[in-house]
Length: 307
Image (cartoon, rainbow, N blue to C red; front, top):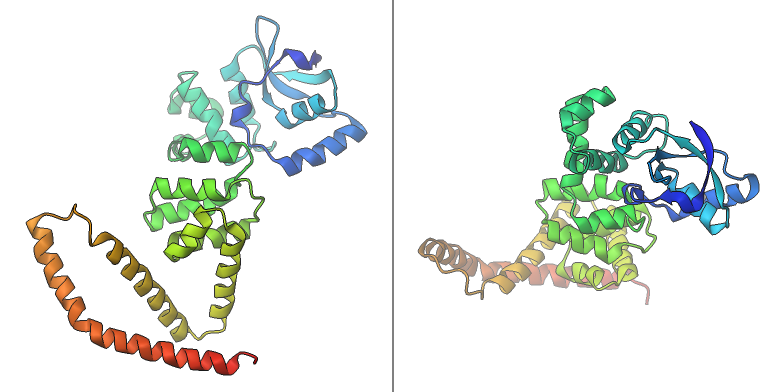
């Protein structure tokens, strides 16, 4: 049912379930300034006379910024769970992202007490459809959830960049949280975030430290320069460069961890002695090969660089 309602009577308890976008909101503000609010806000009416908003938070914030006191309103009824289900049902035609669907399903399960099979039945969806969305939200830390829904970190980068590292490379949740906190709110493009993520989770400790300390521009420049330089190499040269990166990274890791006092078991001591002995026997040959490579590459670089 459509009507007009006062902005002051609108309840924003579900605002945290919708992703903010500063850019989209600015465009909408310009449109409302010219044409007014054309699409009604959607929600449910409750007995005390207030309205719980479910859809139209950008329009609501724009109205408040522009000093608009009365807004168009469409009510889904007087039951919050029914309203959320109706919003999910029409979300194919409206702009409700996967993570927003997940957040609303979590609301139905954790607050409204509905089970996944009931939600699937009422939405005319499969149980897998509900389960996938519920699972996505459960694997997110509260830190990442806050950054995404506040508009400081793009949901796309989490879904298609960070989750890939978490699954394939067994990156810890703590590492992912630290990365997101380091670059959130910097207005980076999806491509730049992808480059930084590859450098942070697969690159050197130096790159990781610089990103963690907020030197994002420096990190991007280094990673882009490295990528450009590597693109001119043959496949064999690229493989060799990757081997050198892995060797450097593992040498730093072993040097830092080997002095730790937590390695005490007899099994570890026996295996570590064998492996470290093998490494020591190969060190002279390895050092000689690396020195030769360093000298040759240094001479070649000197020949191709301008005087």
